[in-house]
Amino acid sequence: MNAAGTQPLEVCDRLRSKGAGVVYGEPIRWENGYYPNAVFCVSGRPDTVGPDDHYVHPHVCVAGRQCFCSARVKR
Image 1 (cartoon, one colour):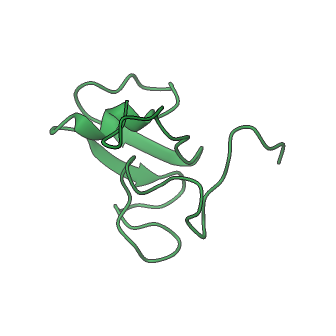
Image 2 (tube, one colour):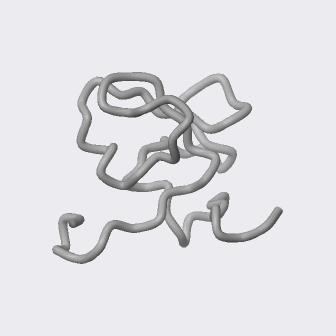
């Protein structure tokens, strides 16, 4: 459950992580944002800033963000 007590939000399919609590190769889940040792980045980018020049994190890389990419949508 997220802070509002509702179901976790879908996280951008391009979000990646290195660190404790996040399994390599698995999709990032909203709950992964609670792991203090995880470092998040966007696939194909070398830092923690997304293509929209804002910080990336499972709690902000959700539907509604300009650069959001859904795993449910075929590319």
